[in-house]
Length: 204
Image 1 (cartoon, helix red, strand yellow):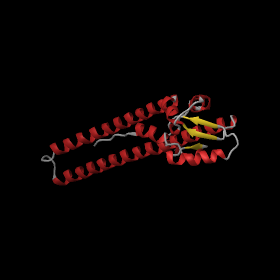
Image 2 (cartoon, helix red, strand yellow):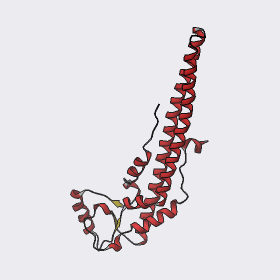
Image 3 (cartoon, one colour):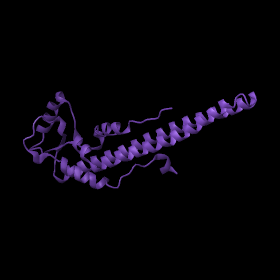
Image 4 (tube, one colour):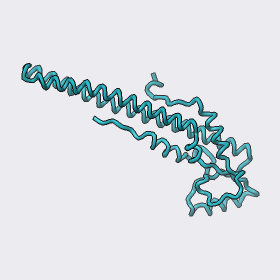
């Protein structure tokens, strides 16, 4: 029975798609940028900020640390499951070797017990995977909230009217508008003690 995860690749992919409901970030395709410009023109001398979320996620010390934690949890879980699988394989081999030495009734009983153990292991593996997924979602939400809060705070401090994702900017002439480095620094400071919290263990 194979048991593998792709959490790390998903981790960075999902976090790069920050929810708009948490911050003052405008992310539109080229066809909608004209509408954004029209709204900006309605404000007298609007002040615009730029943030490179992808760069923050790529360089963040916190993100790298959490990525390593996920790999460690994945490895430990796989090792635990492999040990249980090995025990069951040995039982199955032993039972098969003794088939002609024991009664049919005893063989059938032990076979049923073994099948039950296999089913329980499958349930265990599924439950552990589900727990990792829920824990993964929890860490995503915390990071989204923190990052959005940081951008919002910086924009208020600098009296910025609009914050735009850097990936949607064609040309930047004034790099003083870029809030990425400041946001990255504050993000790592606020999340330095953040760890993966398992849902089941937290609820105990």
